[in-house]
Amino acid sequence: MKISVIGTGYVGLVTGTCLAETGNEVLCVDIDENKVKRMQNGEVPIYEPHLDVLFERNIKAERLKFTTSLEEGLSHGDIIFLALPTPEDEDGSADLRYVLGVAGEIGKLISDYKVIVDKSTVPVGTADRVKETIAQNAKVDFDVVSNPEFLREGFAVDDFLKPERIVIGSSSEKAIKLMEKLYKPFVRSGNPILVMDEKSAELTKYAANSFLATKITFMNEIANFCEKVGANVDKVRIGMGTDSRIGKRFLFPGIGYGGSCFPKDVKALHKSGKDAEFNFQILESVLNVNAKQKLALIPKIESYFNEDIKDKHFAVWGLAFKPETDDIREAPALDVINSLLQKGATVTAFDPEAMENVQRKLGDKIKYATSMYDALKGTDALIICTEWSIFRTPNLNKIKDELKNPAIFDGRNLYDIEELKENGFDYFSIGR
Ligand code: UDX
Image (tube, rainbow, N blue to C red; front, side, top):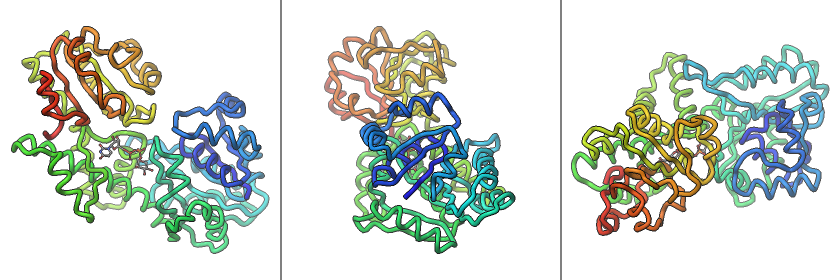
């Protein structure tokens, strides 16, 4: 099939590349000339495991192409994916400027039947707005489909190629048939293609992400309570998670969720509620608890240093909002670092992938180490913000030799408490 993808951010790029992988002819459109040139030369503009191999293969096979021309993009594809940014507006709602802007252009430019697919995470009712906007100028027939993505950063290629479900929101038989044909190769395992109305599809995405954020946040509150009453959240987590109704995943407490999706989506759903005069009380709590949780290590650190961390120097391991990504959007590490700096402390940081992004954001406010051990040199204590695998089994002696105090503040519960104690560490984690 002929597919166009408008917007080559993380979702657009993964979508375009994976659709090319099953033999479709894909043309990706982006307004960023420099980025398009780089992609034409085979350079993947984001860090996402396994994407590079697929990218190269499909460019070579001439199934994956790039252009800056929206006109070209719209004439190429029978199905047009909109994978445009929906940044958070000042009031927490999703800003539809880009989506509706392109929709306006689509109306003017299409000259035969197209299926327009909302791939971006958009508030309930957006498919209708896109439809109306296109219809203002369109002289030909078209359909708008809501097809939310459920891609995790770091696993996006795998999630796209082997989805647990595909959600298609549409009321047009013709569009549904085309979408089912497109996705058939991805659900050979028997996982379902769920067809529903546009609004339900749009809400499914928000509900799924908000539920997961709530699950994590609930566990963070349980962890905080464990600290109060002397329970161990590791035990509680396993005790709960073995109940199949609860499930083992997304129960790991820590210094809060971050990233490009959960924070934005919870806020946007909360705001959609407000707009509809519906009070999402549970989401309000999730937002408040998570904002506080990001700083859960700070009181522990201050208490260890007798409430005075001015001029103390800290090593921070992990800057990305989670492992296997260089993404630092809403990363708890940034909240931790900013709080430390505000209190007069200094920081040397290390992350396997996110250093450049942090350097761009924080500049010379902090120091940047070349390795995890290099970050420890001359520091007063170690703080862990992201659970990268390389931090899981470190050389404990090496850590102790470098630190002025044998103190580790672990925001991701990486280590065995007893083992750290035996090795002479003052070890602080979350809920244990
Ligand atoms: C998420 C959804 O999983 C995905 O389906 C959606 O399409 C986009 O948003 P992503 O943001 O890439 O994906 O990351 P995810 O792996 O879901 O983690 C989100 C955040 O939750 C991270 O900050 C992570 O550290 C945190 N988390 C996750 C926990 O604190 N505890 C857990 O048990 C799981």
